[in-house]
Amino acid sequence: GQSLEQPSEVTAVEGAIVQINCTYQTSGFYGLSWYQQHDGGAPTFLSYNALDGLEETGRFSSFLSRSDSYGYLLLQELQMKDSASYFCAVDGGFKTIFGAGTRLFVKA
Amino acid sequence: GAVVSQHPSRVICKSGTSVKIECRSLDFQATTMFWYRQFPKKSLMLMATSNEGSKATYEQGVEKDKFLINHASLTLSTLTVTSAHPEDSSFYICSARQQGARNSPLHFGNGTRLTVT
Image (tube, rainbow over the protein chains, first blue to last red):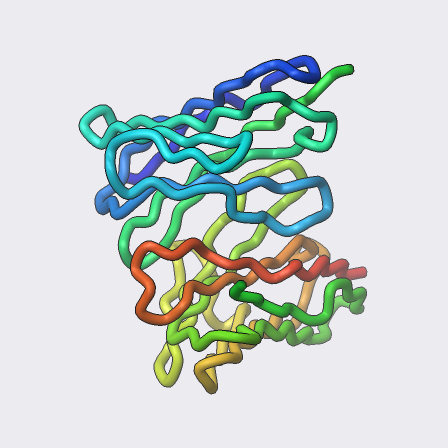
């Protein structure tokens, strides 16, 4: 079967750094994506890793280790507006499967 | 950037009626579009893959006669919820990837919140 595991909830303070891990088990793999979703809104794309290593985009970075079937999203200099749900998603070639999501709460 | 437009954003209908949701790629062509369903505070569940000019591919457990998908052009896919029931109330989101762009991300519409009374 196919599965993605990520923590259900993370809490951090403003200005801190938080890491959201994702492990996956899928029949096909082309890449790992991260999406942000605020309550009531649509998911928005954050980053994508097709190869091992770190991808950096502003305050957000994403890491992938294909041999370990593992990736993470790193959020730096947290802001209140970063409070949202974060989904890892595997591009399996024909379709994209999402993890259950991690709700991030940023406290003042 | 790639934009996906979804309409309507919100709809309320009575049990037994049908509702059509449109998904358009505004500035790119998409031979494939994806329809997801999301319950409150839950993940996005892939319902079906919409293929331009051919039949949609449904995920296991999704009734194809209940959720009719039509992908008539390279920029438009529609999802029709037929004979809607209260348990069909949910957030439906479409997405698409730019044609020929293997590693490009999915671009999502803003979603349709369906309430069946």
